[in-house]
Length: 230
Image (cartoon, rainbow, N blue to C red; front, side):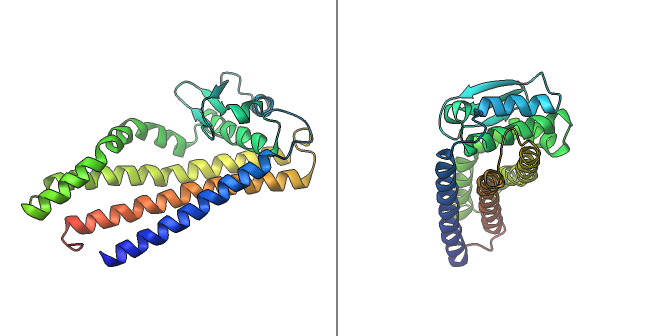
């Protein structure tokens, strides 16, 4: 228990540092105007066209950093700042989300797996916290491990989903960076490409830290289930 608490405190600190670094980098690059003057929407349109993708709509999404690709509706959803923005950050994020659209059009297996997992994981995530708390109470006072077992199974699904997300996000960023490097009409300078790479790398790190956190939780509750954490 003591070791777990220390590990979680370290994980929390690292997560806060990564989140702060990512937001700091994004804010910094959001102020750096793209030499080409293209908006995030225009960058997205160009990348989709270059890959021959014409059945994906580009939409605006409410909220900051709410950018995402919806494979069911085939929409690239860009936050208002990215959709209208003409910065390095806006171009990088727009290209990244289009990277997911490219994955979809190429039947990228990790994206397909993540998409198939979404309905089950959504249900598990909504109930998981209460199931785990109830499970811990029952196993502590009655010795009944059934509810905690269900919680650990749900946590396993969430952890697997988090791990599957990693190759999906890293690959989308890789596709975005490669495309930006070969399109001088989007980014004129090597410095802009470096900044885009930096922003996307820090974004990927947030997913990596989230996966570590999910894995740590799974290990902890599994140890509680088998009596080694009590």
